[in-house]
Amino acid sequence: LKDGSYTAEAQGHNDVIKLTVTVADGVISDVTVDEHAETDGIYGDAETAVIESVKGKTTADGADTASGATVSSEALIEAINLALEQAK
Image 1: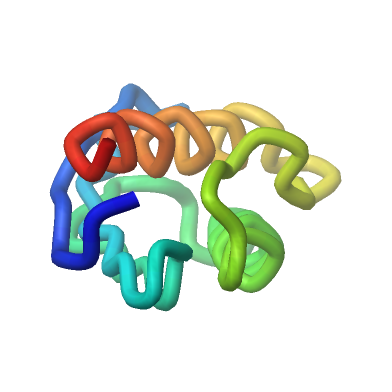
Image 2: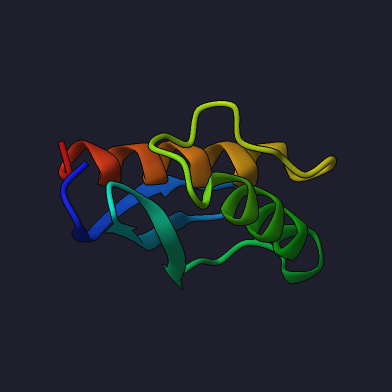
């Protein structure tokens, strides 16, 4: 993967989730959620689980998800992978 910051979005449970993926040394170094309309109490678990499990990797495939927040988790994974397509 090419180093840099890449943005993408995917449909979450309530609305679109927009995020920025930062690639450093060829792997995911950070993911920042720029916008979401998910339910706060439930969504936070999904964001933490997915983002922490993809750091240091080259794909979001196989990322951890949050029980009870499957749609949000899957949207985060989809958006991360879409952002990474730009880094190839």
